[in-house]
Amino acid sequence: MEGNNIRYVQECMDKLTSNQNNMLTKFEIISKNFDELKKVVEQFTEKIIALEDKVPDKKKLGSEVRVLQKKVEELFTLVKEGKENESIPSDDVLEVESCHSGISCSSKVTMTTGLDRDTIRAAYEDVRSDGSPTEWAVFKFEGARIVCSARGSDFTEFRTQFSDDDRAFGYLRLQMGDEMSKRKKFLFVTWVGPNVSVINRAKMSTDKAIIKDIISNFAVELQLESQAEIDIDQFKDALNRAGGANYGTGIRDS
Image (cartoon, rainbow, N blue to C red; front, side, top):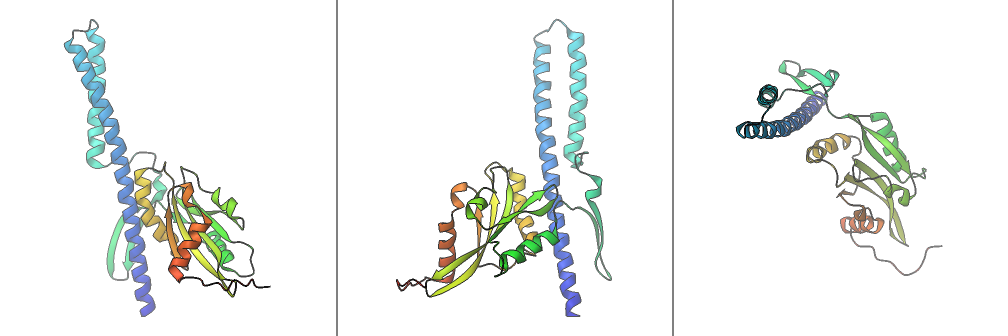
């Protein structure tokens, strides 16, 4: 019974996340349509002013005004209804029939983010394995899915994985402690490049919740927005602050 309740809660959380993504997508569509509407209205205004100034070719001007008027009416309809355009594939829409037997919560939602669970889980376990040389993994967006884009052991290479246009996540294993007590610590980072749009920035909270369904074990979580913040010393400092100070003896272990 407890297992059924957990599944029910998880299914409802998944549906809530999907609905949030759907709302953000709708908002982005409306914003784009509004921007287009603004441009058309500005053009319309310019034509009217030109008409008032008695442009010689009034017939041509009248035709242009009618075209613009029709476009304004179409865009007003799009903005009012939040109508989706053809840029959103129809197969991204999923019918969610029910969250639980006997409880109806049917609705159409746009599944804008998915996970390549197998590759993400494999990379996560690789980083966590004491027998593996892999010390980091990076996860990026390929279309509507989050995938493992790279993994390795060189921190310098890790730093090159994040561009100004990227949204991404990183998982790292760092050796911490002093010479008498060394231990592995894990860190989860969210990268939002400076060129990422406001809409995609807003979506990161829900997208992060999705990937953390797999990447769940770490001591510190950081959000990074500039290359200067991708610094191993800063990462270790954050881990030290989270786990207490390290007190060295000054004697190196052999």
